[in-house]
Length: 157
Image (tube, rainbow, N blue to C red; front, side, top):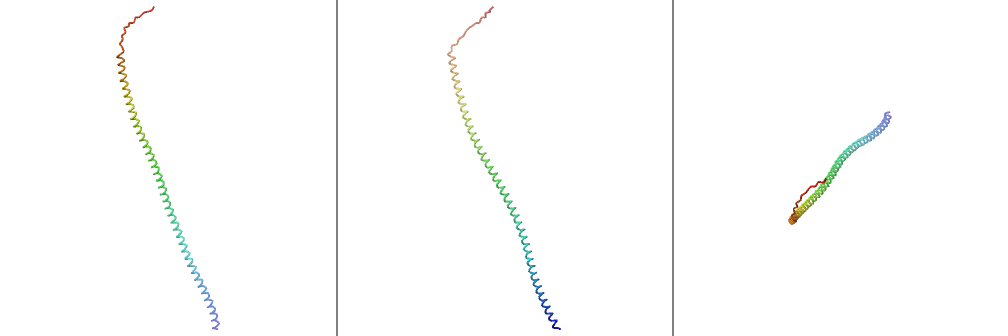
């Protein structure tokens, strides 16, 4: 009788040992899955962290690019203004040079006009003196004639 129970105990023990081994494998498998899930979560968190870092870096890059573009536009604008200023200065210098030449020409024309006027005035004075002396000579040679005349009135009836 004791042996009969012992065989059953062995079968049950074998069954239990098999179950324990099966459960241990499942526990090991679950531990592996748990570590895989934990690792997956860690990797997902790292991916999210890296995505956030990428977006932060993109925002930073875009801000720097915008600053660079703004500075470049300002620089281009300042260069354009400087070119305009130089063009205006060149134009102004050209006008000043032309004005100076005109003033010199006008001054020369004025001097020439004054010389001509002096020459003509001197010529006119010389001619008048000559004509005066000529008139004096002519008048000196003309005989003086006196005429006595009387007017009588006659009436007609």
